[in-house]
Amino acid sequence: SCAVGQAVLDVIKEEGLQENALEVGSYLLNQLKNLQNQHDLIGEVRGRGLFIGIELVKDELVPAAAEAQTTVNHMKDKGLLLSTDGPDHNVIKIKPPLVFNKENADELVKKLDETMTE
Image 1 (cartoon, rainbow, N blue to C red):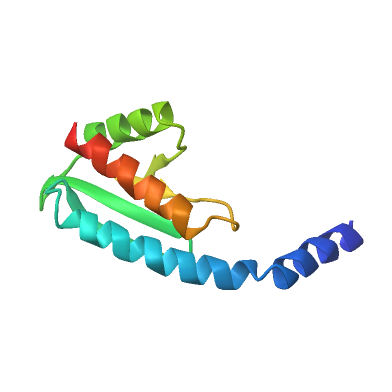
Image 2: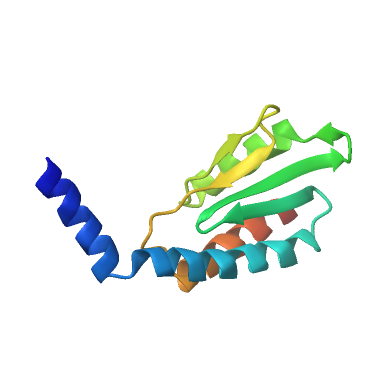
């Protein structure tokens, strides 16, 4: 099992997957922050690499848990798997695979924008 683990680490290094996660994650974070300016429901966008959270709020003090779950469900219908997290379950978590690219990020942001506009 150590050999398998080492082989996985070798692929991650050879394919540049850590660098990809940083580059694409930064790109996605910026795209989502732009989306935040268009949707009042988005209170905060935060993350590192490809692990990103979008906090939905009705106002500064009221978490939007139902809206977060509805958004996750509609995104699933559109072929994208997201989840909710946080103590109030109002944070949409984006946890894509390391091979996630900018085109995938653009598709995610487009579908999220469509979903939140509906």
